[in-house]
Length: 69
Image (cartoon, rainbow, N blue to C red; front, side, top):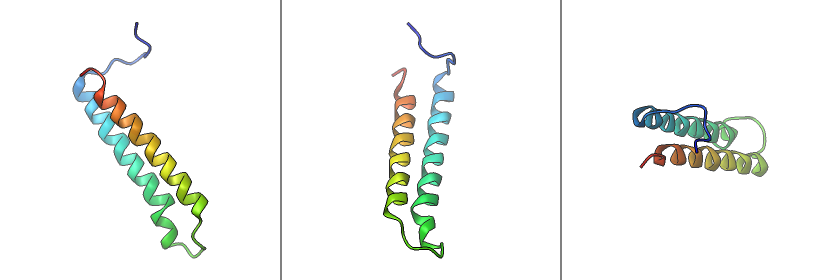
């Protein structure tokens, strides 16, 4: 039984997984490393949220790229 409305071929899944990985890196860069250039104190909470978002999006990317193998 299929649970998705979209049915991507393997090339489309690979491209989507690659772009999601790029989004994860931008999110981590903005929330973690961006704090070093800001003129505020480093926030451990914001860094932790950035790491959680990075792990979540990378997990989705890996799951999408592994589907169909």
